[in-house]
Image (cartoon, rainbow, N blue to C red; front, side, top):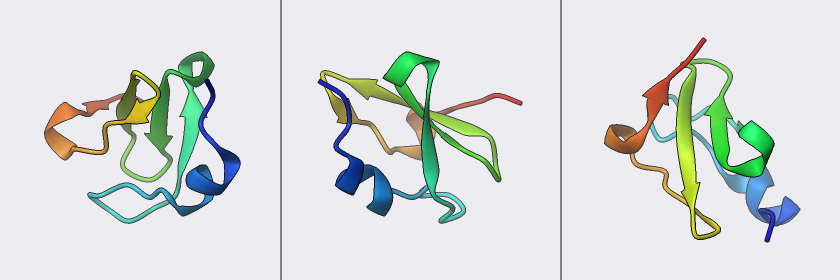
Length: 56
């Protein structure tokens, strides 16, 4: 099940507070400013800084 558009509108990176976008075919959320990628596990975004990876 994809992330609900309303939820995506309110999600922000916990590190820099920038909105996130869907990446990796809807399996992760990426911050455009600090480049952190947060996984989506069992249709739940894991918005924990220590769970994120940093990608350019």
